[in-house]
Image (cartoon, rainbow, N blue to C red; front, top):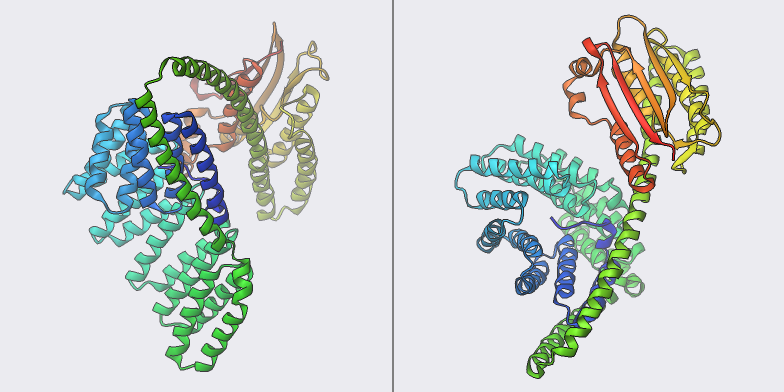
Length: 582
């Protein structure tokens, strides 16, 4: 639903930073009497609280934002904030107001997508029939997948699991929760933790303690837990609770000692106290009074130093003071509004507002242009870097093939060629464009590698127009390689007889024309050869290449075009790439 940033933002020091920034934004907005900016600040604060699991605070600020957007008649933001408000209420199990807000958002008809999503949520919460609720959830999952909204997809699977539990379908609930966890852990760690807890509770409720332990250990291995010492302690304590329910107090004691040690080291007073209390309970059950006394002595002796290191105690006070300041700012705004209404001074204010608005629009426009350009360059750089691991993975698969077939000599030769190729790839990985000669060398090395792997499957030819300047001409690096890879791996290698791969570079007026021509089995036949698993996977290298072409066109106006066509009678594929040389 709401944007989820890096999971470390859940730590108290970052919470303070977020609240302080929001307070500063709110002060500026109040000083300017800018209702839109105030509402946007409320939405941002609500998002922070939602991601921290404080749904009551999220609801509070979304309600304020909704009132302002209604006043401004801002239908787009009103629909969005109304939906977010419903989600915050639903998280608190306030079903009636949540249902009302979902319905209101659906009736706003801002877009077909938002209408469908909100209508489905109304059906999910109000329908008495499980099959209708499942249908509504599945429809929202499909919409979210199409829009690439991973957090919403994960939430949908979690909702399906709840219905599965109501229907006593434990296996299906487990499957849906696992799907939700896999999706959410990539970009929504707070959501992933909540889903993992649901899954663990499911296992514990059904006395499947081993699976519950496995699920909890899995989340402890995630980077977003390992890098957050406070959350790590919490998860270890949860794991200890499972061992207690499993009647394995020894393992629980070891885990709680570990949690206690981390809490002392990192300065988490409350978490250390929780570990001490749980350890004391276990010692009491086992009659180990001496261990309990020693534990409390240790804790009390280290408490002053622990409190001095615990930033959260100071941060909580800052949070409290800042929220009081925000409340004061809201009261100041109300007073200002009243004064403005009483004085009724509009003329000079209107002129000043127009000037300010004009300047603000120009500033925002220029800033947005700069940000868009910068973001595109960052995205292009990210895609270039992502190509390298993708290529390495596929190449190492080939090495694995040689090793698996006990062909050590071929494996060694392949690795030698591979290292030479990778050196060239890495040297050019930071540049958007590289000399044509370097790109040609890389492609020749790559084809030589694949020829080693598929000796009896294909030959290749490379034809270069003599009018092309090999050294001064600049081309995008590794742009052609994924198409060559596709031709070999999805076309030529399935032939019963040796095939031919032709790569040509021609100068056509102001364009460089690149043609990849193979006589493989063709696109349609290749699809038939794929397994169901392969069909469900999206080729990352090809997707990245097409995204790179789009970004290169946006940034450098190269007018790069790409067409992929089957030959007649499934006799191969022709890929044509054109690059503007001017």
